[in-house]
View 1 (cartoon, rainbow, N blue to C red):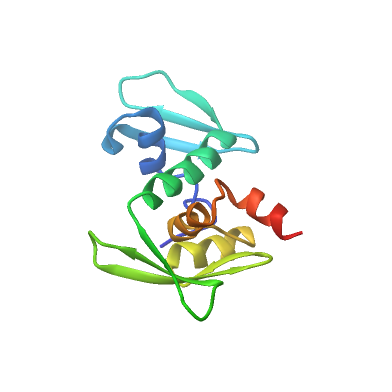
View 2 (tube, helix red, strand yellow):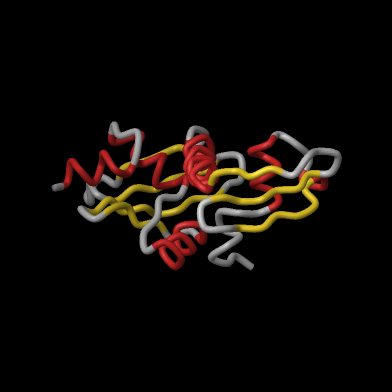
Amino acid sequence: MVTSQNILYSASAIARVLNVAASAVVKFDVFAKVVWVYVKGQRPQFLSKKLFTQHFVDRRKAEARGLTVTRHAFESSHFTVRNELKGTSYQVQAIASGLVCECEDYKNQVRFFGRGCCKHGYAVLAQLGFTDLRSYLASQA
């Protein structure tokens, strides 16, 4: 189950950030601006929360690269984003206040952050010529 804490901070995320096996992450605690991490065989360390936020975005951008985006012929703000490897597709709508997707990741981000951009959204942004949500939102103002 996704919570407000584990959407960004999890043993899996820590393992990816530190490039270690997830099973090596023994314990972690989230504080105001840092995450305290203990990895088996290493000294405990503090990692910046900003590092996790950037990892969160970078991971979705990387996953977006393998997706196929098709713009709807009669609704230019509607897109179908398909993952050929998984055989899945999601509908994404580009609106002035951001991108709206029907996937669970997007719904969780909206639930915990108030807005979101999933891998499907990043695939649409790339199709539209944007590298990030902020630049898309600035173009809509």
